Image (cartoon, rainbow, N blue to C red; front, side):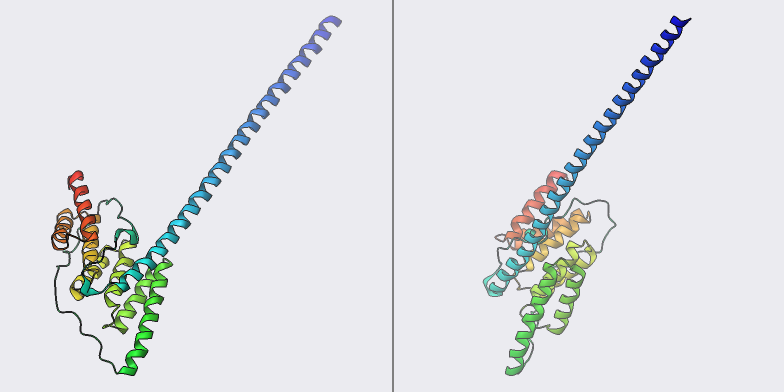
Length: 257
């Protein structure tokens, strides 16, 4: 009986040691898994920081593009014809369209007479010229900061205050762009259409018609989109907008649109 008791104690000790070993192994496995999860979390945080930095760089590049495009627009004279500014760099190419409701008819390309210049006395003209430039730059700065609703309101106020301004066509175009980048497509169609209708000699006419084609593409109105883009290529064959229109037409052909 004494021998049996010693065997029982020995067996219980071995079982206890085995249980302790198994528990230790389980804790080690849990610790290993926890450490692995911590490493993966650190990796994810690093990737988020990298993506955030890239996004910040992209936003800064967009702001710089606004400044460069606007400077080049001011250097261009309507009498010189169409500029070679790439309109796709202003807001990027549209995303792939999804299912969307039908939209109103695309604004018709018209060529009415240019708006008459504002009548001013010599002194008033000098004052208004400074005020115009300041107000226009203020709207542009808001746009550069990505505050699109505020920029849209600033451009609307500018156009109401200075309907005969030499910056009016640019202001109308950038107003339309605020709608385009925020995917307010009905407002964008109307605003780009006003660039074409109200400023037929503006260098921004080809760009405005290109964006109308892009919007119709976004809305899934393939016939209207193709009609606008083909008309643009035919009317302004040597423009950058025509080249971009041609690329979109090729894309539509590949997609079977």
